[in-house]
Image (cartoon, rainbow over all chains, first blue to last red; front, side, top):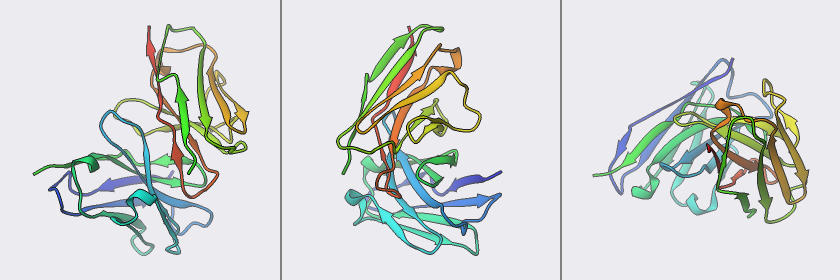
Length: 117
Length: 108
């Protein structure tokens, strides 16, 4: 059974960089036909797609975040990562990683990242 | 960019009642729509994909319908565990995803 686990700092200072990793077990990130996504949810609000990456490195980003976000994949470590630069309080959210083939049937449990000094 | 509008924002019902949730797309997405259920502190769970197909393990009381721009999620008879927030999501521009704002189904 596929398992996804987000990891990274729970607290980031304003203007700094948020970095998270999603470690995949029970399956390979190099599986064909699936993308790997980051999705976030500010406290009490809805879901926001951040970006998706294929194991080959092909990546798509939400336009409004494109200038600040980088998603990468490491097939040797079977994980993928999110970097978000110049964070503000508006980036405070639960960050989920997920596997998608149009829809997301496998999600990590999510990790809360708070942006605060 | 496609915008998904869910209504109502809050639906107050009693156990055993029928729930009807709406999701409207700003342009046609054919049947490229999914519904998710999310409970507090949990990740969303896929309920319905491609507008009308139940995901693995989803009870038959959940059903989806619609095409083009108007979609509906119906819960035929609410169980206590169904009180949650429901999101629609479209994949017409996959692997880019768009989510609706959500409908909270609360106990009346």
